[in-house]
Each structure stands twice: as structure tokens, then as C-alpha cells.
Length: 442
Image 1 (cartoon, rainbow, N blue to C red):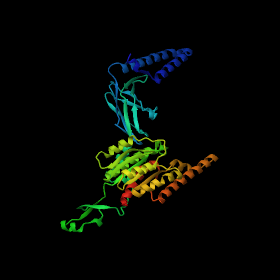
Image 2 (cartoon, rainbow, N blue to C red):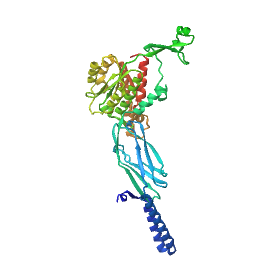
Image 3 (cartoon, rainbow, N blue to C red):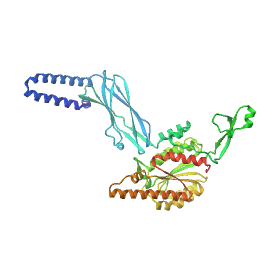
Image 4 (cartoon, helix red, strand yellow):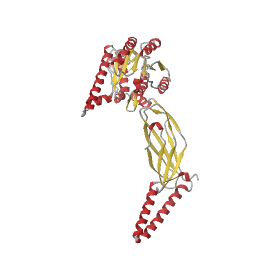
């Protein structure tokens, strides 16, 4: 009875019956075809019986093992592996059916493979997740067939729940390129250091490509080889990321909200600051101050920031920048570099919060992130053909013009800004951080 529940009829089985039935109908009118059709019927019956015996007799089975990561990276392609192994004595065809999480709404993804006897085969695929949280995978089924008239189902009853964290894949990518001095491949600019605060570290041997202006001639004459002075940047400077969780950050772009883009950028920027030996911290704010991590130099600082970012959710209220200024004035005593990830769509929305931004900018280096609405840009550049399309284009141009007024108003008040498309936020945030470090503003 248990094996009977594993039996499935395929389309080939029904097509075979339909074909034989059609031939029998034809042979009713053409008598000479009756014997060949009868022979064909018994051959087909024998093949089907042999197909059943092969699938269900003996100890033949198919085992499926998932090799999934412990956590997913939000906004990235996450690689996944399914391993399948056949214990049948001959080659079989297998269809792998994965029960994907409900949130993904994936219903058309299955994997067709051919398995040789007692050999393992891997299926590589990837999933792009656009929301943080827990993703639960149900059962994984392997549908085995030999001639193709029947299928036998093998089920793994293991269910897997995998959390989706902010983009650690992006973080590792930037970290790897930083250690190999190849960040320019990702768009990080090489910024000339003008007036940067540098501290003497030590004297070392000259290496080809070093700046000859830092040559230490006295040490070179003493040891009879070229020596150069090694300087280092000032360290342990606090770098904060303030993330707005108000309703303005719920706006979606390419299936991800502005909040998720800000969270991914905060994670990478914090790691870049720690690699530069600075202190990275973050907090969230809306009506009240939410998750917060004080800028410190700890071994587990990135883990603390990642855990704090994982639990962030947007709210439907308008953010209160007055509470943000009160918190910063009370708890952040040292002059810091502060990135505020928010979004102003109208000049009135900016004017309501501009006084608090100016107060923050007096005590700290303030960088305000304003998101570029790329969909409006495409609409403004389109070629309208109907009256309603012309109207929509004019409205889009009005919003773009108001965005430019917002940037100009921030610059007029001495506040540095990053006006960027959501997908370029991480690159532009790192470039701004390196620019401010190079200019010695902090």
C-alpha cells in the first residue's frame, strides 16, 4: 500500500492508451490492421509491466540531499545545491520538485536530470530574495522514471527554515576587492588626498611605485639603501549610519524597498569603516529612536550591526528628526561622520526637518542621502503619444525639478548630500566616506 501511494501515471501512459485505442478503432474498419494492432497492444502492455517492475521491485531508490546555506543574502543571487543519488541498477530519469517558500511564489521551477547507477549528481541553481525574514522550504520530491509510463515518488520529509540577512555577499565582495586593492572595479573612486591628517608610523624599505617625496634620505644614507617614511591615517573616528524607518522608506524599486537598499549600504559602509580602523555604529529612527549600536572597536562589532539590521522594519508614521537631534546631542559627544538614509520627495517635507539637520551639521559632518526616482526619469524621457501620457510626463518633470531644488537647498545650508539611484547607493556611500576621509574633514 505504501508503494502504491508512490505510483504516478505520466502523460506518456495516457498518450499510449489513446494511440492504441485509435488504432483499434481504425482496425474495426480496416480488418487487415487488427492483428498488427493487437501485437502492438501486447508489446505496449509488456513494456508498461516491465516499467512497473523495474521501478518498484528490489531495493532501488533515489536519495535527495539539500546543501543550502545557513542564511540568505538580501538582494543577491544566493547559490543553492541539491544532491541526488540513484541506487537503481540502470540509468533513470529523475524530476526534482522543490517546495519553495510561499513568499517567493515559485510554481514553475523543477529540475530534470539523468542519474547513472550509484552515482551522485548535483543541481546548482540560485534564488534572489528581496525581503528579510525567515524562508521555509517544505518537502523535496524526486520523481523517478525508466521508460516514462510511470513515475515513482521519493520524498524527503525534512523542512528547512533559513533566515535572510542584509547583503553579506555584497559585503564580502567589497572586502575581498579592498584587500586586493581592486575596489575601482566596483566603481569605488581613487581619491587624491588633499590636506588629510596623517600620522608618522615607521620607516620601511622603498618599493617601486612609492611616492619619492616621502623618501627618508638620512635613513637611506645610513643603511646604504633607499628608505621611505610610512604614514597612516588618523584612526578610531566614529562613523554612524542613521536609517529612517518612516513611511517614505517603504517605496519599492526593483522589488526592494528603499529601507532594504539603505540597510545593505549601511552594512557595507560599516565594514569599510572598520577596515579603515574607524569605529562604526548605527541606529534607526522614525517617531522614536529604534535599534542602535554604539560606534565602538569590538571584535564582534559587525555581527552586532548585522543582527540589528536584520530586525529592522518600516513604520507608517512620518519620521521625527527632532528626536533624532536630541538623541545625537545627548549620546554622541565626539565629532562624527553621520550618514542619514532618508528620502525627501517634496520641498515642504525638507523644510519641516531642515532646522534639525542644520543643528546636527554644526556638531558633526552630516551626509544626507536622497534617492533618485529612476522610474520618473524614464517617464520624463519617454515619447508621449496621448494626452494622458503628456500629462504624466509633465508631472514627472515637476517632481524631478523639485528633487533638484531639495539638493540645492541642502547644499545652500552647507549639508553634504548623496543623490543616487537606489541600486548605486552602496558605491556612492563608500565613495563619499573615502572622499571625506581624504579631505581631512573628520
